[in-house]
Length: 170
Image (cartoon, rainbow, N blue to C red):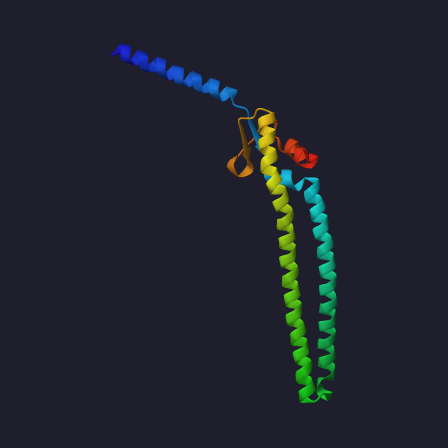
């Protein structure tokens, strides 16, 4: 019986020790994907382009909105002097303009979403490849991302290096 207990203790010690040796040999890195991507030159340039598109669309929509507001005011002030037929046409024109405004607003939002997705798709495609290259080149066994990690010591965070690699274009 003592012999068996001694063997179990030796086996347990061997497993425990070998586990520590294996863990000590692992090189683990961490990448904050969102931060790595958002800090690339390509993303920042894309964001600037999106801002320019947004300003242009906002200006167009503001002009249309001001026209609708003015037509509404004109209709209100002149409605008593208008014939029912003319009043009906003016109301229909305003309703058509409101529908057009809503359509253009929705189109602008869809365009912004598509453009943002296009920018991110280009970076995301490159991101996975660059992380794998970085891991192989620097002998990492594992590189983890934010959703799968609760805490990371700063020495394991390779986000900045990955961002630089993405910007290098190599």
